[in-house]
Length: 290
Image (tube, rainbow, N blue to C red; front, side, top):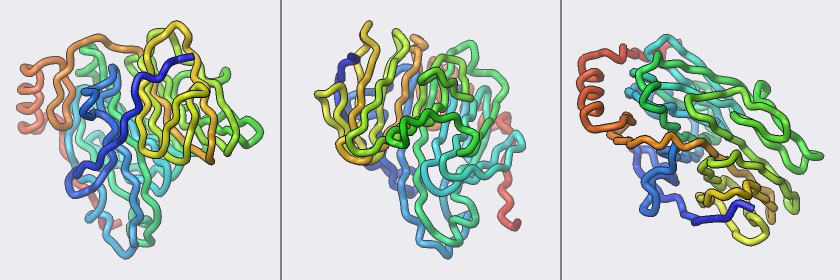
């Protein structure tokens, strides 16, 4: 079985006035190739608010894929390449920023007005140097469009990318990944096979797990696995539980991050800042009147 290298507690960070749980980077790990960042934002919106007061307004990205799993609530995505789209609970937004894009991420107008749970997990997936300046792309699917494996309603796995139990996920990127959302009832177990050479993380959303019949994790824990020829993980739920598995083939290139940019060296970062400031990422004017 794939051995647990370390279990790390997510910490609270303030991102533009929004309190999030940051699992990666942390004081133990700068990044786990190809995964650069993991943010978990779980909040209860009181209602009677305006959409423009909430979420994250227009901001740029280059050089990687910011990917958002909508766990509860709904997210309204707008961007500088013309997308204007609401994804509801259970859906996924998979965006490749490529050479540059501006987007905003806000709770939907209805959620802002009526209130309710807003629970999303976003991770940043690095792009290899040869693909960093590709044309930006945005792709999203709703809950009913995500393939699932279901073991007698005791274990339900949303297959976002890669394969699980012979079912292939709909999303792909410039490096191979396996991304799963795993929901388990108390006492159930699930075997997960990891491709050889992949780096693997498990972010624990709810409940409690036993991992490989030995290690334990709880809500807001990030489990970092060692690489091994024995590529199986066994999860056993000691409570009703939910987690996100992130596994990916390492790119094995140097990276330099600066705010919303992920490049290979400081010269590229300086050029990215220049391009962003000169308007080369396009523009985004949000319309809140509709």
